Length: 428
Image (cartoon, rainbow, N blue to C red):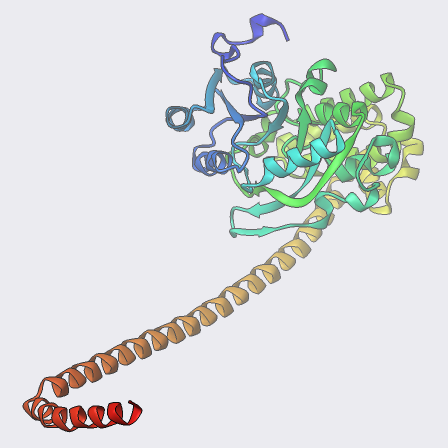
């Protein structure tokens, strides 16, 4: 990136270098930004800097960022004209001073111990890349789950390794997300690893380069990052404005793998990942016009550029092969019907899951009510015991102070005196 591309307020800051530079691209994320930034400021690893790049937001995101910048000196706010998350992250890399880099989306959040634990793994294994399991947080139903597929560390050796340990599983295991990985900054900068400056799938080239060029990769097998789904504010909600970005992202990444001489060995991992990208991007377009545009581009040259025809079928599952055949032959009605059928199955499953969650919540509320009742019973018992003790103490004191008690002590005093004299003489 040329210096002219870096806004004037994106110069590195003075002071001691932090251990981790956290880079957060922000575009119209006002509803979730506070939770994201709070999760970073609450990290047990305190030696961090948080570089937030406002990507031309039109909501109150910039005002929120400025308030956090004033509150904590570790937060720095940078601005750029809207250019997408890839350009924002690249500008963040230029400004970063940390020994390690971490990229968090503005609507996601992470566990307080995430960076500390990731750093421990990185130091222990001298790793260029540390990959972490993550949670999926559904914004619509407010449920968080931790699927096993977010990091299949069991497919790789314990400790540290490189991509050759299991080429066929590379992309399905580690994904192209940047927010489930921590990177050694020197490794990223020395190898000129940068994000594609497009709006969608800008992260695949970055992650693929990092995974392939890394000397040592290590895993943090705990779900310490939460990725928010079901919002309408992130860049994925406007993919119809950039319908072909995913094709360019995958084609550019494939060319890097070819140039680096490893595409043949990674083809079995690349092809299913590319099919998945086609399915997801085509079938989640927001309107029929964008759907038709993507379908026509895939039929025209997209499938061939993505290496999804001919002998690539041998690398696909039966379901993936059938999907590509429907796209290639233009069987739109069948394609949409099968997707509708799959969605109905997903909806039924989702309904069942929601019902299960609601049942658990009902049971939790009942259990909580029972605990509250037991707690109140204990409080009442304690208050009753305190009342009884106080009442007995008052009665005891009143007995000690009564006239009869005083007269009794007086008349008993002389016999006790005589008794003590007799005992003294016997002992003498």
